[in-house]
Image (cartoon, rainbow, N blue to C red; front, side):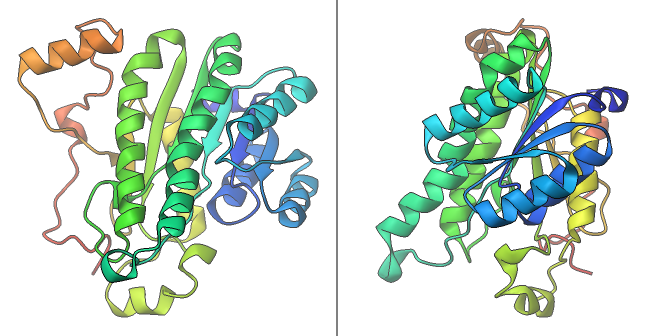
Length: 284
């Protein structure tokens, strides 16, 4: 989406009551978009909506009907939908093995993965009807690299990355562009209890504003199926995919419904990130 087209567009932001979602919603509104905040936190969500002149709708992203209702709120009040930021997410912590908590796992999966699946599919008809729509799913560097401190979170974010890459190929010719945002640790409430520990261990903690800027870069410059990494001290850029044999690429492309020659999820060689020699996501 060209930056100029944000003005006058209609955006839906899940998890928009605080943290990254709030930052994204505020920035979209400043750029002239009409914004619907979807969240379970009614007090904070309504406050953000009032501040930006938008709307709030209660939405549990783990429930498909709630996602459908959020989309319908945008369509009924603003006449359509053009941008969807699927941002709701939770951490589970190191509760695998002896400490395994099946209820915590179910909640983590439902919000982090089902919320993206439900949100994307609920929005799909309205985005198609708009002529061209954009879906940006917030994944994480935990969807690209191992994160032993929270295996469940990493598993769901890896799944989001896979979903973005597959839907990016499948829906591009329908006018719905699906992209992913993969930030490292952002300075939000999610890491409040471990922030100092992360810094002591050498992890870079990103200001929310940096991730919001990266969201806008992904929205305006990203191609369908791309996942853009946001790491302290590195430029924001799409993460390249492993090259597969042509026979597998062709088969995958045909099954996705895209033209064999297009392969929209493949990044150019020039997009390959510079290797820093460590995996600490911004350690310096």
